[in-house]
Amino acid sequence: MNNRNDISFTDPLVMRVTRPSPCSYLHGRVEQRLAADITSQPKSHDQLAKAGFRRVENWVYRPICANCNACKPLRIPSGNVNQGQLQISQSQRRIIKKNAHISRDLLDNYGTDEHYELFQTYLNSRHSDGQMADMDKSSYAAMINCSPIDTVLIEYRDQGALYSVILVDIQDDGLSLVYSFFDPKKQHLSPGSFMILDCAAVAHHMGLPYVYLGYYIATSHKMNYKSKFKPAEILSNGHWTPLAEINEDI
Image 1 (cartoon, rainbow, N blue to C red):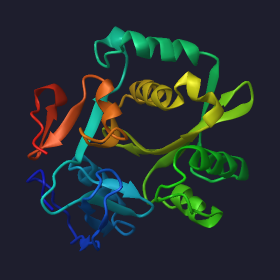
Image 2 (image 1 turned 45 degrees about the vertical axis):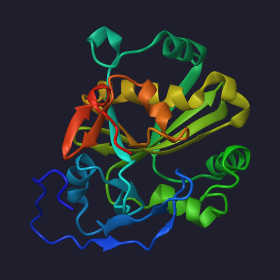
Image 3 (image 1 turned 30 degrees about the horizontal axis):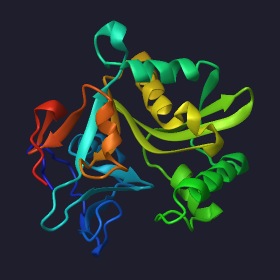
Image 4 (image 1 turned 30 degrees about the vertical axis):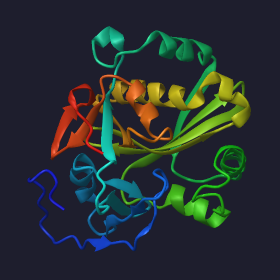
C-alpha cells in the first residue's frame, strides 16, 4: 500500500483486494483493485490521492493487477500560460475560444433530475457498452451524493441549457476530477477538453497547484488523451515525474 513510502495514519486503514474482473481499457487483461472505505477516516484521502488512489463514493482504490502496471496516476498544473504553468496549445486555445459563451457554476454535490437525464443521454450516446450503462437513478445519486470529503459539482450551461457537469473532489493540493458527462450534440465544442482546461483555471483561482485527471494508459485510446495536457506528471515508482521523461514499460 505504501507507494510513496511515507503514508502513515493514526488509526489503521483496512485494505481489501477486489475479485479479478475483465479490464475495461486493455482487451484480454484482468483487473484487480486495492480498496479501502474511508468513511471514518476522511482525512486520509488526500495522502492516498497523492499516492495514486482514486475515490468512488466512500471508497478509495488503486489498481494492483498481476503482470500489468499500465495504469499511471496523472496530474497537470493549474493556472494558464500567462503564469508559466499550464502550457496551452493552439488547439486548446481554439477550444477555449469556442466555449467562451459557456457559463459555469459550482454547486453542492447533489444529484438532480436534469443532471441525471443528461447523464443517461451521454451514456447512451458514448458508453452504451460500458460498466456504467445500466446505472439507475439511485446508483447515480450515490455516485454524486456519497462523499466523505469536500466534493462539488461544476455545472456548465449554454445560454441556459445544460451543457455539461463534472464531479470534483477538493484536495489540499488540487482538484481531482472524478467523473464528467456532457450533451453529445455539443461534441463539436470539445466539452471534455474544455472542462479540464476550465478546472485548471478554477484550481488556479483557488490557489491549488494541481488538477488530478485519474489514470493514464499509454496504449488505450480512452485514456491516452490526457497526455495532450502539458506538462503532465505521472506517479512512477513512488515519485511524481514529468511524463515527457518517462519511458513507459507496459
